[in-house]
Image 1 (cartoon, rainbow, N blue to C red):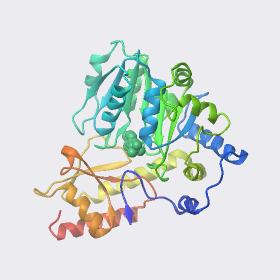
Image 2: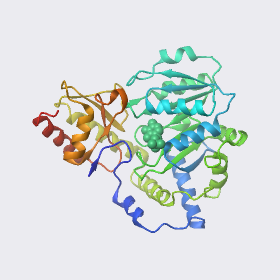
Image 3: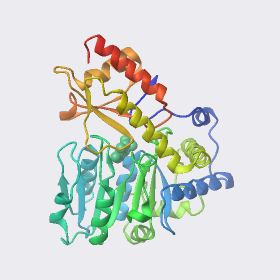
Image 4: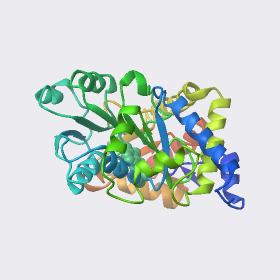
Length: 359
Ligand SMILES: *Cc1c(COP(=O)(O)O)cnc(C)c1O
């Protein structure tokens, strides 16, 4: 199997083998130490400001998105949400469900956010800003420098879903002034799905302690209190946390975040170059290194059928799109344990499909 999905992604043997071992009991000094090291490594990699905290939630990325909306935001906030696809829509749905007042900038699929879009919201009484740095559903990477200055000018609490951009695109929490960043285990961290991470600066932590608790399992206050001693309120996905520890350690050992980003960006560039003579075009003007959204150019060829053929006849997984984009876009991920030789295999399969009249 060769997996180019945008999560779960291919794992390194050294990480995978941890999953084959017995699961240790976690209320021990050894596990606490591992969790405190996890926190320290994540705070370094995200370039979090001093006094920031990181907690580990057992649940996929959405669990942490929901925990943040519930524990950091409140009913007297006025939040601006950027909704450029299914993950932006998820923040909108969460605000609705938890009765957080919000306004949304609804962008047509595949469109970057511009100064023009933000202009009407200058000095408009907003208190917070919610964005998915990389709207993975369409492959648009937003201009974070622009968003950062908007948030700074308007003194907004800045919440960034970095789930699919962490380790793929440059990110500096302190420089950007991000107060909360969220990521997950199954994207560029290249571990199994099931754990998500929330990094909070002291402003966000203060809010969590002030806000009323609305959910027992996703209570960030409880998570913060437990993480002080390297523990979690309930039994976490112990094995994935051990895998994350090994992965973070390897990233540090193998050149840090810059090396990681260089590797993913080289893979993305290599793939984008190799498909140039195929009847395919990249579908976003502002792409993350995490994935390439691809549109077939041959009339009558559906993106979804390409996904099916690759899966069923070549044992290669790419990511299909849903809804209106189903026939127009499929996405090729560059995260995880992949090489340029893997890109060659995918491109050969596409070339073979071209010969067979399927592309
Ligand atoms: C993958 C992803 C999520 C989280 O999805 P889960 O399926 O809950 O892990 C959220 N936001 C973005 C931008 C993502 O890419």
